[in-house]
Amino acid sequence: MREVILIKTGEIALKGLNRGSFEDILVKNIRWRLKPFGKFEIQRAQSAITLQPLSDDIDLDEVCEAVGKIFGIAAYSRALVTEKDFETIRRDAVVYLESAMEDIRTFKVEAKRSDKRFPYTSPEISAELGGDLLQAYPHLKVDVRHPDMTVMVEIRDYAAYIHGPQIEGAGGLPVSSSGQAMLLISGGIDSPVAGYMMSRRGLKLSAIHFVSPPYTSDRALDKVETLLKILTGYTGNITFYCVPFTKIQEALRDHCPEELFTIIMRRLMMEIAVHIAERENIPALITGESLGQVASQTLLSLAATDAVADRPVFRPLIGMDKKDIIKTAREIGTFETSILPYEDCCTVFTPKRPKTRPTLQYVEESQALFDFGPLVQEAIRDIEEKIIRLEW
Ligand code: ATP
Ligand code: MG
Image (tube, helix red, strand yellow):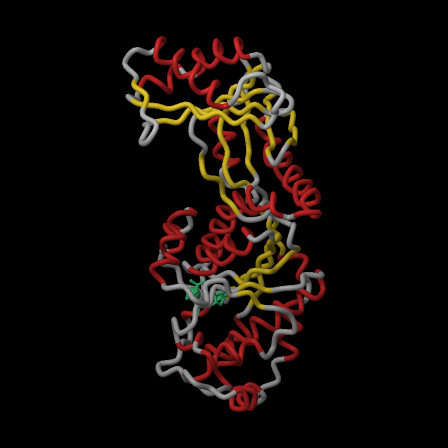
């Protein structure tokens, strides 16, 4: 008996004439993700993709776990493939479903026949196979309204597929189908979630993190690396730029009004991120900001930060409550790492009374009290040597 993973693409299926190119990217991503598990034959047919393992030692549970994190997949299931011969379907389905039937009491069979030449109608398929299952597993009853399990039979162009419930996939669009963006990542809860959300909309991620040794420790940097490593399970490879920020922060402390520390710091981070993005041809930035969450994320503060960016800054958390952000952080597995207590460069030199409604003019004048240009240039010099490549 041959078992495959049957994948449904969801949103991509609505892409009209562009659908093919989205599917190409998805299949490429799948191929590349599954490489460590062994060889597969990957087939596309009728808004589904089938993955057939080409050797017996491939652990399909592990493969399913990886598939569950690939963006662009709406749902997936393990499925039995048979010839489109009704006797074979009935015989093999009964054997294939044995372990799934053990723990349930009620079921129904749902048939879908996209190949209309198949000589039995969907209701006929359901009724016949339902009867076979009742006979083989006498503890079962049919319940068409609230079954413990729905057995699906799909008669497609090239083969028939039998499977239990579909598992919800990661959704969204395949990574890279929307282009690339650079995530400003801190060690906090929010920015990893922001990266996850934008990658889910098809963006390939790069990441940038600012460190201020000796005020921040190596462990704080390790934490960010761990967070990015978790993200790569969804996003694929991430090029990570780690930028020294100590001198800039010290200059800021020594020359600018304390109430604007955070806001000017954020502008300088943004400016450096823009420089690197420009060099690397990355057309957008991503931050984990959420309106009103802290002083540096009020409307006017965000406007002051935006003013130094020459490209779109995506802030997918902008309208989310902290509790919803935390919920996502738990779901994607970053929360436990994010709450480890190592200091971030934002937590050194924090103003006691940060200004919450800074006008752009006041911010610009205050920042102009010191010429940060040379320090910004110094921070991005030899940046190639500060790149860490994180792979899935
Ligand atoms: P987070 O949980 O992402 O740290 P936060 O609510 O703590 O967010 P801030 O610390 O004010 O917010 O940071 C706002 C945003 O600025 C972050 O979401 C992140 O995008 C960016 N940022 C903050 N600190 C750094 C840093 N050290 N390196 C790179 N980006 C940073
Ligand atoms: Mg933070």
